Image (cartoon, rainbow, N blue to C red):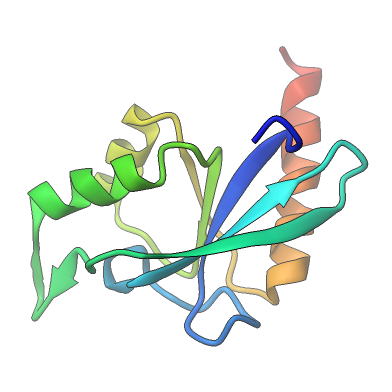
Length: 119
């Protein structure tokens, strides 16, 4: 992790586009952001989806957030307010950016740099 400024978890079913709702995601692609604003794929994490058959598993939501706790951001196509709150409680910022993964990560990098200006 020392090599990276931070990590980003991406919900994608095809490894091309951010196209999965947080609660239905069973796979998160983890990318590391480097000092020069570039990024690299690190690993795939498989989690049990929070939403199954319309019901939300609160315990699983908390477990999934804790499994992504080393990530600064989670990129998804959609996410509900309860999941956003649980992620924030674990130090993770959720972002809805349904786009090509590369574009979405570049938007996160730009957003993160702007946020640092206000610290």
